[in-house]
Amino acid sequence: MVHQTYTADVLVVGGGTGGTAAAIQAARRGAKTILVSEFPWLGGMLTSAGVSAPDGNELEAFQTGLWGAFLRELQHRQPGGLDNCWVSFFSYDPRIGAKIFADWVQELPNLLWIAGQVPLEVFRQGNCVTGVRFADLTIKAKITLDATELGDLLALAEVPLRWGWELQSEWGEPSAPADFNHLTQRYPVQAPTWVVIMQDFGEALAPEIPAAPNEDISQFTGAWDNYSAEQFLNYGRLPGGLFMINWPIHGNDYGKGLGRLIETEETRREFLQECRWHSQNFARFIQNEIGRRYGLANNIFPAFSTSFALHPYYRESRRLVGLTTVREQDILPMAGGMVASLNEDAIAIGNYPNDHHYPDIEFQLSPKSILWGGRRTGTPFTIPYRCLIPTQTDGLLVCEKNISVSHIANGATRLQPLVMGIGQGAGMAAALCVELNLSPRNLPVRVLQEALLQDKYAPAAMIPLLNLLPNDPDWLHWQLYYLDEPEAYPINGNCPFLSPSQYYYMNGDSVTVRKTCCFQGIFYRIAHQDYKFTMTAPSKYKGQTWQIVTLRSHIDEQLQTFFNEQMLTLWGRINHALNWLIVENLST
Image (tube, rainbow, N blue to C red; front, side, top):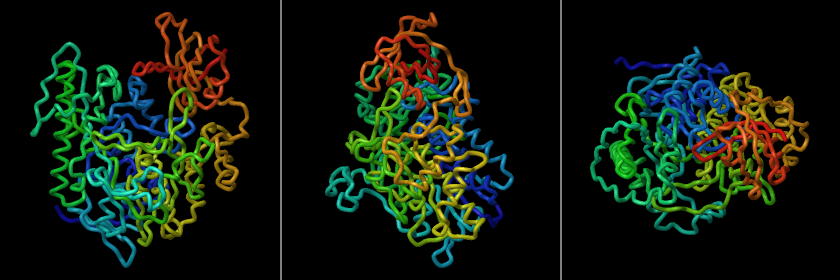
């Protein structure tokens, strides 16, 4: 092949969750953009890594930007809907997610996607990154984004970075260790998982899953001791009789010799092969324990992979040393409140509870969760623009799990919806830098924030307000108000000036378009934010008791006012995986 040289305004290296969002946003803004991916699918964690049951940003108030647009597209395209599992409110066939991203990219004539390439060399002029060399091509760009799964571009460019734990003495993080110990040495970063998709073959016998080298399925004994086999399978149930196998303790997290991921190409390949074998043996264990009704799914992922994701679900990467660093304190709730303090240069919202994965070890962190809508969710927090910018290097931004974040806080910032928001923010920043002929560090953050809030395709929230939905006519006003007046931001996360809710109707709205059913029955208050509902109609559910949950703020507020044993009429959707009735509207 002839080695070609391309030029672009914006180069995005890596086609994962953040990189795909960044490339789409930069191109939609008008920048000539090139996206280079290693794999034939775009979307990373959401698709090619197989984690098609995303966590975080589940509240409708946080379904904004490209994340909200992705959910709405899934709701249109996924037969049977997204209410299938209990680890997430949204589970789908990863092939559908990959098709959505491919369609979005192909709609943009100023976005060139090149697959099957990894970066080999970074070009610099002084302290400015000017381009990247791949095996078959070189790309020169005004702004380059590192969206690789493991921060490979940072290493190639010799940009200051972090890998591993920081001690409590560095930033005073309450959950950080006081000294390096056996845990920090054994697991320098969180363990990845090579997701495998299994299938219910019904009455037919599934093909026997072969043993992988070094098989020791006894290591998985007790993996789901606290759950029935059905509950275990429902954890990551997907439509069409499929199951996402991404199980933490005694499951297919793999952490032996994690340092090999960043040593050499050979050691990385060695680790990845072991990681894949580990998941194959876990699938074999599941089949042995639950029965030959369950086997490896057919033709899910392209090329050689079929039932195995194209690459592991990486939970942690090399991490940038940026202009600011997100620490554990930045994601924990303010004293007496339900939200974290604002970053004035916020460009994305997250709300996932801090969660670390180390095989066979449950690592306790400072609590970062709230009771809301009939179940537990995470404390909302924001990501500052400055954590995407290197301390000295120009012409470069990051937009994956490689942002400037501590090892501890990474447990909350690594999730798919937030990384998608980070990618959208980075893509918009890159395009604006080209428009205004500025380096990323000199881009006024308010210009970036207003561009994201007013994007004509997928406006994205900067301020986490639990009761302010993006279809509210005052949404933009209050987003801008709290950017101007951060000291007025309410610590309970609720905008105090909203008019009564009037922007919903029974069978769909501009936030989520989907069919709902009508249910009648008796409401029971078990405890604070713990509600049950015994149905009297429709007849097929008569006498059954379901847990009430909601993603809508006005429903959350109403549920807190009802009396025990009150008769209600609810409109919503059933999720059989965890006996949920997801309420979208109600009346007494």
